[in-house]
Length: 333
Image (cartoon, rainbow, N blue to C red):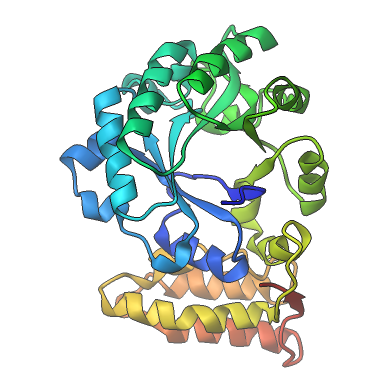
């Protein structure tokens, strides 16, 4: 599995509908689920949390938890359900995850993470990876980052996704923790030098494919989050620019056309239209008519009985704003 370009797990955003939409734009990027807690899988509606579309491959399940036995059980389910990778969240700084003893607070307990990773690896044959920060709270030195990674690597994890910011567990909101702590890409680059046999994926503050290519000269992969969500059209260039694959020429309108059968199928299963369309509002960003597109969907997709005509009409508004022309094409696999 090629992890040169991945799209981050994002709570309330990277659900199965969003991932299906992203897959229409890039055939190669590795997609991640929202974080799912081990407790939710063990005690909740497992099928609801683990269900995904076969078209999403390659796709990884991200887990939140710290109990080795529970992590092992959930890793086994990840493999049974057909996920390509299972990832352990050691980077989320919200109060809710701290109280549950998972997320970024686990950076203070590398031996516990190593125990969990070992149990997960023993329970499944798919890759077990870890996503984390460069530190938390008063962890100020690169040496402390090494102290976190070393035992986990010894436990058998060979893929680390590193958000190049510290997390402050007290005093900053999750949103502030994505923006306020300064980025330190050099530490992530240094990790690759110090652990050449590990696969190091860099995350945090990356906004363009040119930036991705710069990072890829120093680490093994890049992970984009909110930029990919808010400006999804950039993903249509990923296969060509990052993976060197030339494919057919797609326009934004083609992407909507390709999405319609999925929308119809999901509506027939009782899914509400806005649960799908909320993820595509940024598709026409920067194109005349984009505001009308967003407004029409936002005002109508939530209504009872809303169907694909809402989406078709929104696209027609964009075409009208562009004198009846289709949106520009771009190469996508």
